[in-house]
Each structure stands twice: as structure tokens, then as C-alpha cells.
Image (tube, rainbow over all chains, first blue to last red; front, side, top):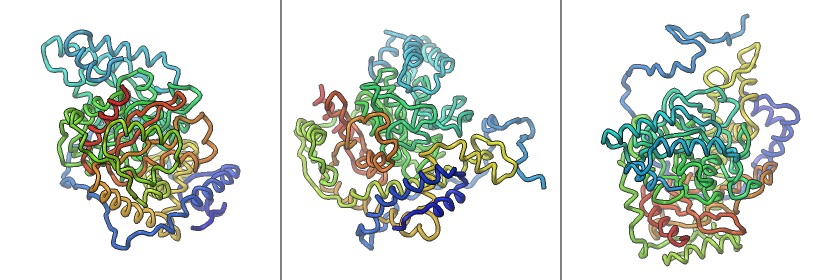
Amino acid sequence: MAKVGQETVRHIARLAQLELSEERLSQFTEELDAILGHMASISDFQTAPDVSDAGPAPRRRPDAAEPADQDHLIQAPTAQSEVTVPQVKDAS
Amino acid sequence: MSGVIKMAAEIRSGQTSATQVVQAALHRAQQETLGAFLHIQDNAALKQAAHIDSLIAQGEDPGPLAGVPIAIKDNIAQAGEPLGCASRMLQDYTAPTSATAVQRLMDAGAVPIGRTNMDEFGMGSSGENSAIGPTQNPWDPQRVPGGSSSGSAAAVAADLVPAALGSDTGGSVRQPAALCGIVGLKPTYGRISRSGLVAFGSSVDQIGPMTKTVRDAALLLQIMAGPDPLDSTSLTQPAQDWLSACDQRTSSLKIGLPRQCWTQAGPLEDLVRETLAQTGLSLVPLDIPSLTMAIPTYYLLTSAEAASNLSRFDGVRYGHRAEADSLSDLYTRSRSEGLGPEVQRRILLGSFALSEGYAEDHYQRADAVRDQMRQELNAALQSVDALAMPTSPSTAFAMGERVADPVAMYLSDVFTTPPSLTGLPAISVPAGCLEGLPVGLQLVGRMHDEATILALGAAVEQTQR
């Protein structure tokens, strides 16, 4: 398994939409390297080639329209006939 | 304090009232100093208790859990109450609906009195990862109660409530139950609906009861179990009479002891083995090689699922919203401010395991090992009726002892993760004490066979009386 460096962790953090301070980046790099080092044994573990058991498949509900549950709107900042949300797109 | 069954019987018969019992539980919860409760819901609880009392006064059936106060882990929804997952991210969130499990317990007469502390979003094995603060072990406040259902375990162990709900992704019901000396049951995957449980590792998550006795856990299971149209992974089989299953004879049953789980040769293993021997059951050593891969497999797969599930907490769809000038900064700052260090660590690990160039060696590899583990465990359970091992490799450890070493913390889950990964039912029951701290014994059953591990758990319980 690959050794993890700061550049990799910085890249992964960007993908995961996390902002890391330099101190936290250094800490996470060290910890992830130790964690993945411990997990390296999984590469060498022999699995039978014919094993394929994904477990039980989920059941599907009929794809039918149902009235929306108005209780969900209690989380909205203001909710009457419309929901008001803060501006999240750049003004430009 | 009475257990669930006795307490409900006393309320139903009029020996005491739901209001009296719930008032006493609320008082205990308000006075507690363990950090077990995050929120106490006096008004809703007293209203529900009064409703139970009025049903009894009118001669109507108040349900098998009539007036029994229960505690709910902070990642399982109850309508109108906080649902915070012990995270800054959800500190202002109120649940719009109730989890199916909670609703079924309330329909049976149970009275939720509050929300219990936990490792943030269920990620932790000690209770120390709560953004609100750690929970102390009632047996020794300098020690952890285990996690992630830390508050639920402490609340039951300290007699604040006779039962609590936890959620179990890799041992989060069983491990704290073991460290606090109570019973914790993780049913077969899909047995209890996950609707209303905040998702962590969706292919693994299960809600489970935490109680003082095996019979109490069986009763709660049979009330919560059964198909649910709101969870496509819930099993189609109806609930069974698991309470009666606790009385099944067990003398002819064979128990497998996987050698991979009995490697420490110390006093904890000796105690668990002696407790098993006292049951008179036939004990059969056997090999399940993939169990040695439990920790890498579990942490790679569930961290990958967590990275995906927790992407919804971005300050827009859900959760804490940071001040920002652009959309991209809004997402990043909201997540970085709202999510704690262990949650961020798992998101990074999961994102890494899924990322291009690394997924084949990590996520896909772990998925293949999981398939093999499922096959090996199912094969072993053809030759024996259940498997047994310690629930945790140690008793409750000191606060702070493993915080700086994530690998040491993750290894706390070495025995509880295999049933989680493979969907098998498992229960932790008290097996005695070592140096004044409780030890748990884990029994793992065949798929859908909670009945056998409940019967065996009741037999182990008898040895402790």
C-alpha cells in the first residue's frame, strides 16, 4: 500500500471539502500513514477467487408520488408559501 | 431499580403510576454528573406519562412498555426533539419525524426522557469524541464507558433508566455495554428499521437495545423489529416472540470459539472462558482466518461510506453554516468548523480509500475480504450454533489513554466488527468483573437467529446470579 504524504492528504481534503491548518495537516498525515500502515496486511490476505457474496439485496418501493410531509419544513429558515435561504452563489 | 418488564408490570397493575416513575427518572437524569445526557425532555415525557396513566384509568391497554422511561442516543430521531449526533454540525437541528424504532417503542407505551451523549456521528470507541464533552464510566469516572453509544450505556449502568437505544456500526452498542456491565444487542442487519437513524455506514448500521437483562433486550427487540416501508433494507420477516426464546433449553447447543479471537491468554480471556464453562455448553475451537482482517476491512469500508453519507453536511443541505463569500468557501468552512477531528479523519480515510488510483487496493480489496468473511462465518455457523469471544480485548481503559493513537483506539473494536461487516446478530452479556471492572462476553448467531443468542445470553446471565 502507498505511503501517504502531505500533498496526498491536502488533495484528499480538498476533494472532501475540508480546510486543514498546517498543524492539522501534519497531524492527519502522520495518523493516516499509521492507520494505512496497519491496514497494509489486507493486501496480502488471500481471498478465494470465486467468493462473491454481496449479501441481501435491498427491496424497492413502488415509484409512486405521495403528498410531501410538511413537517420537514420546520428546519427551513422561514417557511410559509416559500422558503427563504441565504445567498450562496457568488454575486458576480 | 426495576428492569423494563417488572417496571411495566407495576405501572400496568396500578402499583405505581407512569407519571411517578417518569418524574423519578427525570430527576435522576437532571442530577447525573456522568455526562450521559445531552438533553432532557421534561415536558414531552410528562405529557406522554400522563397519557399512559389516563389509558390505564380508562381501562385501556397502555402497551407492554407502559410508562417505562427510556433514553435515546443522539443520532436516532424523535419528532420535535434535538437530533445533534453530539456534533457542532447539528447543534441546532430538530428532528422533523421520529425514527421507526422510537415510534414503535412509544406506541408500546415507552416514554423517552432524553437524548444521550455519544461519539460524534457514532465514530469512536470511548465516548471521548463527543463535541459536547466525554461521558464517564459509572464504575469508575476516571475511565471511559466505551463508545459510541457512551451515554446510553452509562445511563443504564447508573440506573438512570432501565433501557436505552444505541446504534451499532462496528460495536457501538456491544462494546460500551461490555465496558459498563450491561446487555447490548445488535440484531441481524435489517431486523430493526434504520429510518430515522442518522447514516454513518449504511451497509452496517443497526439500532439496538441496551438493558440490564437479556429478557429486557428481547422484549425491546420484538417491539422494534419487523418490516418498514421507510427502509428498503429492513427484513420482510415479522417480529418473533424473542421473550419466550430466552427460556429455550440450551444444553444441547454447541459454541464455536474462533482461535483468532482467543490469542491473548490473559485474565480477561480466562474469565470469559470460565463463565462459558459454567454454562455447561459444548465448546468447540475452530478457525476463521478472515477475522484477522476485521479492523482493516471495517475501517476502510465504513470510512468510505461515511465520506459519502456525511457529504450532506455542507451548511446548505444540512448543518452548521459558516460565514463565507463564495459557495465553495461556504461548503469548506461549514464542514471544517462543524465536524470534529475524528469525523474529519474518517472522511479523509474514506475519501482516500475511494479515490482514483487507490480504490482497487483499498475499498475493493476490503469489499472482497468482507465477502470472504461472510462466507467463512456462515460456514462456521453450520457446524456450531453460535460463536463466542470476549466483547472487547480490555476492560474500560483510562480517559485519554488512546486519544492520541487512533490505531490503538480502532483495535478496541477487533471482536465486534466481524458480525457488523457480515450482518450477523450478536449480543454482549456481562461475564463477571476483573479488578472491579465489568467484562463482556459476545455471542454471535446465524443470520436471522436472534433466538439462539438470546437463549444463550440468558444462560450466561444465570451464571452471574
